[in-house]
Length: 313
Image (tube, rainbow, N blue to C red; front, top):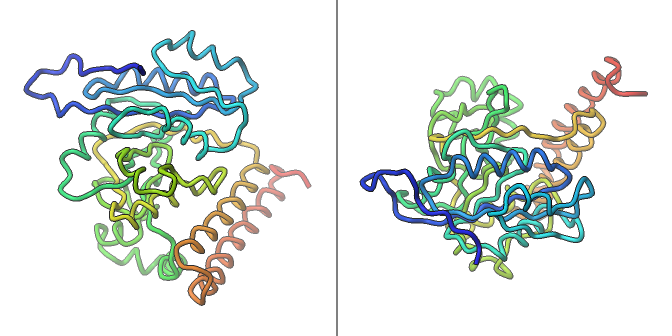
C-alpha cells in the first residue's frame, strides 16, 4: 500500500471533500533539485491526501535509493532505461492510487499548498476540466507563460502583426492569444497548460488508447498533445491563477543547447499541427508562415550569439 497523507491542521468547517492526489516526479541526474521539489511537496501539502511517486529514469549521478534514505515515505520506481518523459510518467501512473494525477517537474518547488488548491478547483468547477495548470514564476519572480492557445494560421499572423492584438482590450486579447499576451492574472479555460505542473483526473486515462498518456514524444510537446487529446474527449484545459509555484526551468545554460532546443520545439509543433489538422492545405500554409517566422528568429539569435562571442565559430 502506498503512503496516504490525510488532512491535517485544518479546521473541520474548512475541510474540503477528502481527495487523494498522486504526485509523479521524474528524476534524471538532478538529485538536489528533485530533493528540493519533494521536500516542498511534503512541507506544504496539507488539505488533501497525497502520495509521492518518484520515477528515476536511469540516472548515473548517484544511487536512486538515496531518495528513500532522505524521504522514506515516498515510492521509488527505478527505470532501467531513460525512455523519455512520457514513458517515465506512465510508469509512475501505473502505480498511482489517487483520484487525481499531478505530473510535477523536478525543477519546480512549492511555496504554498498549491496541490490542494488545484485539486479543489476540480471539485468546485461548474464545467469539465481535463488538464489543470497553475501560475508559474522563475526564482526571481519573473512570470512564465504557462497558459497557451494551440497554434493556428490566425495566431501566427496576429503574433507577427503585434500592433493588432495590442490594440484589443486586455481581457479579450488575453483570452484570444494567451502566452505572452496574458499576464496570468485570472483563471480561465485555455487550449493547453505547461507540463511542469499538470494535474488531471485519473479516470480520464480510461478514455485514452491503452489507458495511458500518449508516448510518441520523447520530450517537449507532450503537454500540448495530451491537452489536445483531453479536449477532443470533451475535457478542455484550465489555467488556475489562484496559486503560484516556482519553476526553475533547468534547461542547459549552454547556448548551443538552447539553439538545439529551439529546433526540437519547432519539430514538435509541426508534428502536433499534423496530428490536429492532417497534412492538407491548412498544414502547408501553416508551415509556410510558422517556419518563416521561427527560422528567421532562430537565424537572428544565432548570429547575435556568434558575434557576441557566446557561441564558438
